[in-house]
Amino acid sequence: MTEAIQLLVGTRKGAWIYRSDAQRRTWSVQGPMFLGSIVNHLVLDPRDGRTLLMAASTGHLGPTIFRSMDDGETWAEAKTPPAFPKSDDPRARSVDHSFWLEPGHASEPGVWWAGVSPPGLFESRDGGATWASIAGFNDHSNYWDWCPPEAGTPDGSLLNQVVIDPRDAAHMYVATSSAGVFETTDRGATWRPLNQNVRCDFLPDPYPEYGQDAHYIALAPSNPDRLWQQNHCGVYRLDRPGERWERIGEAMPKEVGDIGFTVVPHPRCADTAWVWPMDGTDVWPRTSPGGRPAAYRTRDAGKSWERQDAGLPAEQAWITVKRQAFCGDRCDPVGLYFGATNGEIWMSEEGENWRQIAGRLPEIYSVVAAPIA
Amino acid sequence: MTRVMIPSQLTAYTAGATRVEASGATVGAVLADLDRRYPGLRFRVIDEQDRVRKHMRLFVGQAETRSVAQALGPGDELLIFGALSGG
Image 1 (cartoon, rainbow over the protein chains, first blue to last red):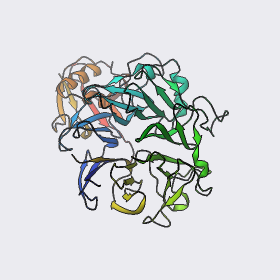
Image 2: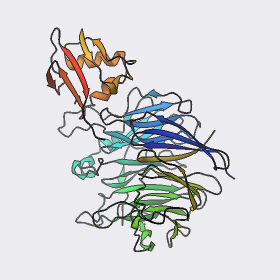
Image 3: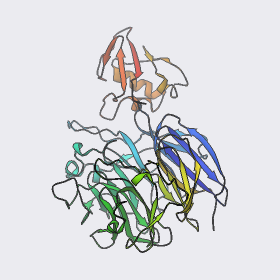
Image 4: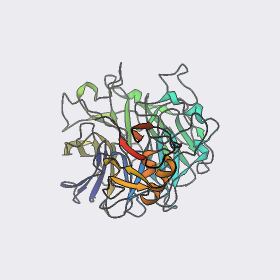
């Protein structure tokens, strides 16, 4: 059963919304919104089906959050966007950009979480109007070990994701680019690293307690005890209450490798997920391996992978799919969508027969699929 | 009152005005007064540690300043520019 879908697209130079018919065959476009602004994430609140939040900045201006209650027609700016506490510490942090927006638990309407660069976690309890620093992470006694200034990724170190256990609002995970994955069971008051057996090719100790670059983590919607991770150093799976990640990317073809930015779990089958490999050899081009883009699907929890490239360019396509730019909907069959650095958006059903649905956009940073209310 | 030049990047806050006036004895005080009238403007220019954002430039007359504590005298004009920030 399919339904009409909207794709919320953030780019280096503005935001767009694409809306489909119920069969996901034809698409209309709205935008640009905030043309010229860097839009890292544009997210719909699934609890009310109408609130949109946008993480935006520009090359000049500081970062902020915009909210729309009318399908993106009009926007209001946050009264107090995410900002670190004022400090006399010479390392005093200022938010460079908000990267990830996460609607709160279903039991907490109006709550949102934001991950920012430099790594920081913020919460709003009023639908995105005002934001507060989460001291349990941002002021943790180990913060500067977890998030040293020199550990910056090219656009700055990130707290790049917030993931909430659908069974328990107090149980959350965050992913960072400088220290890996962390878990809280008390709604952010305390945190501990969760990185056992996740490799660090770039540190003297290849398996440290923290220091990993967790590009993307996702809970399996049909089994929230299963976590998938696309790390800087491979694809992993963790089944809780276990603590030790298993590198399931070892089963990927050697000529492709298991480096990438993102992983998308199937909404109904906990053993199925897709990754989008990129070239992580020598100087890390981060483009499609061999110039031939493809998704890879596992249907056995990572024991084996199959290439899915039907419809995609067969050669000379040196694109990158960034960590927020690959997603799925909840339909049956599942609609998969990716936005690429060359400004194209593609979709497929279950990874088969990819087709392009948009192009000529600026560099795409994020694509989020949501049902149209 | 201090005359303030608003760059194109910020005219969404000032309803298109490129020249406005604000009161205050320092750059920070003028920006705070501006923020009361145009909510959100200050944070786009000055970060939470009171530092001028990397790609913004402030001038008092012909002299550049990076300090919100910079005093303003009678007749001074505050000019806000968006600097070069990439393609």
